[in-house]
Amino acid sequence: DRRGDNARHASERLEEAVGLAQALDLDVRAQEIVRLRSVTPATLIGRGKLEEISALILAADAEAVVIDDQLTPVQQRNLERFWDIKVIDRTGLILEIFGRRARTREGRLQVELARLEYERSRLVRTWTHLER
Image (cartoon, rainbow, N blue to C red; front, top):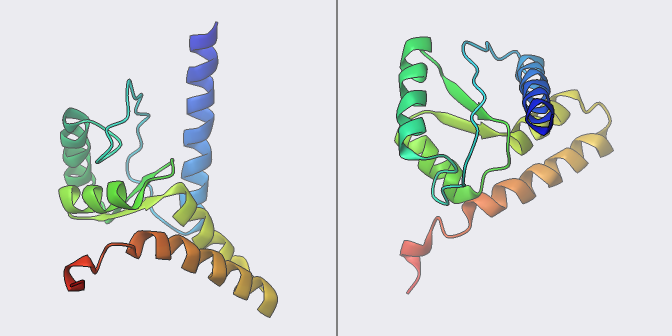
């Protein structure tokens, strides 16, 4: 049954994401599998689910939300504004883990380069109000 395979895959991904968050000593207070019928370009998820997650954030007194997907810079910014909380996507989570575990100078430099490339994509258009 494809539906069962998808549910199992989603459950395994959630378990892995929780493990990644815990590897960074994050206290996982709530977790949820969100099935997307379609992607909302501005926020990845629709307004109703945004509101549901807002309630979870308040109930859990969360300090951050981890999204086990790659967010566009716009999606990440919009989610952070909507929830007024730090939002970390899968790439950011993995880069942070690599950064903490890199032992050699070369390893730390490679992680820093990857992190800067990742952050650069999030800074593009941040300062457009300064353009002529």
